[in-house]
Image (cartoon, rainbow, N blue to C red):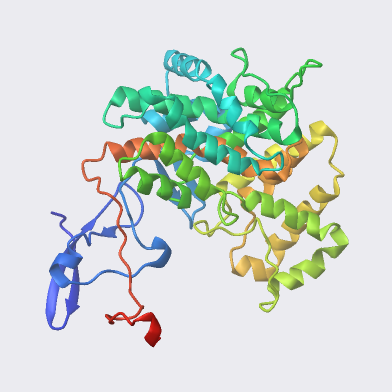
Length: 429
């Protein structure tokens, strides 16, 4: 029992509830016995004040603008680490030794191919199908092909499923892209690193050799790292809720992909880039700034502010640096979209309206610019996000499966519908 207690007084009765403390962050009131003691539920739309689980994977301090993977600051990992090393960290809790990283990398690399029959799935989609529609369907279909890794009670099968999804999501997403542009699928290559392999599968063609530029590959690796996990966001919560029913891991990750597709979540970088294109030129920025301040105008600045961060998004600073490196390499520093982005960021950081509301540029503001410069269409942005986030979903799913306190998710409601009434015959209505 916790030493600290929260007291709730209702109708002259007082009830005690334990106050639990984590290693860092705010304390939480344990209300698991609230209904049995009082007959009442809490009301928390969006679960913004509810801790649905305890986790040791990712920590966010929105006021400080801090993001930690297993205790390591995201800026240090983005600068010094690699995506596969971060995957190992998220999955197993510690940074790997050189031998452990080599073994992990080999296991991932040798699972990058997908079952050959899965190629037929793609042909069943229309050519203009959104890549996320394809990725959602194909990830869910993995359970039909890999029966030897669907038993969630077998730790070996859980491990195999985890490696398979981390390895195959880039292949599945790249195939969705190739299908959308009418080009032949490009098979993965074992001699390339994770990010380079993904770029090669997306942009190589049989007619000529394609070499991945290391600056582009580094930027891609950083995008993967920065999006690898982000605590209990909507898609991660979806994966956990799906997993709480003991669904197979492929179904759970497919549910996460589907949730990520929403423009309020994974589609935010696409929305941010579309907004920059809508503005069009630097001289039109004041017009759109005024519209953003007008409560009667539906226009909103995309890529600014964050549900959790009330300070500068720590991922945005790293992404900004990558954007400059990539655009400089590609010789598109004078790109109109980039010029609008840079000027818009400058104004927003100085304008008191945005400063007071803590509307700082977030990671979505920069990632779309980078992906666009590399050559990806906006329809692929969220699919790339799904590739990045797969390891976070899997780490959270595995943690939940191993939690002795795991229960099937079952939120309650505040009912505002009709009360009990008798059926009326159709002739009397």
